[in-house]
Length: 429
Image (cartoon, rainbow, N blue to C red; front, side, top):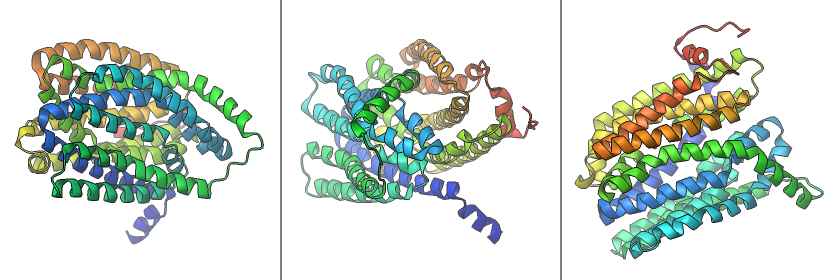
């Protein structure tokens, strides 16, 4: 047993997964404790307005990233130096896309109360920082997630100190915008410092290369970004519909449930990210299927563990963090936990399809999901409100993972998914 544990801990991918999990634990811990304080301070209705702004910025973030995280991770895994140069070229493109994407939000937020506008600005700045954070991509792809952990710990500690000062001195709630920004800004600055110190980009003509790489990214990311935008729409459209067809108070409660139901997925994403380079380096369908089956089993195990823990302690957690006004979130969070598990498994098989250049298929698939989700969501939210919103997400994720994946011809997804449950695949498959 001791030898097995030592062997596991010495595996660089597992070690990197552990560091990534710690990084996300810290990030989610900070997010929950900072936003829960805001939620309790301003109440469900105002928090619903803030959640609405957050949802809009999430859509802009998906556009601004332009699929560059997938492109750069794959390039770094296969050709390190070229991948680093690619990273250096994406920041300007991301910034331009983000600025243009924010224009509609300005008109949408116009006329809202001052507190909602200020919080929206804080969320926007934090989102812009996340868009510019190319260093997390590099650290994850090169199995150096420990740097992300260190940076996030520092950012979280400082943000919590600022939040404590605001609460202790009973300052105006508007000052809570500061820790929302700091929890993103401080880690970004630290990771940038580490990257600039340790990574040297050898390039004799950086301006020409930057333009060349930017052009390459723009056109390469077109199919990915359509898919990413579609995914962002169908993952956030439920909140948008709830905010328009129901009440902002319902949206505030749903936002809490969505945070608690989806925040645990950082563990699954950490495992997936660490094993993605191995998947991209697979030399056969069999070995790719082995890797996806392994990652999927881990995700399923972790998902059910979290579900059990939440069912036992979730009620107390919500009362402690958010207060009695948000207690309905306890009833709908289990639905969103299962939906999150299905979504994470969907990401595994999306990477599996990327290996076989399934970018266009995923683009068309997500467009279908968006159309279907809009129709189904409008019906469910209109008649069942917050419960309809929750089941809408669950149904969409199930169909996306199963039925719509089975039409992909370049790889047998059904066989790959059966592999999770022990079905054997011959090596020539």
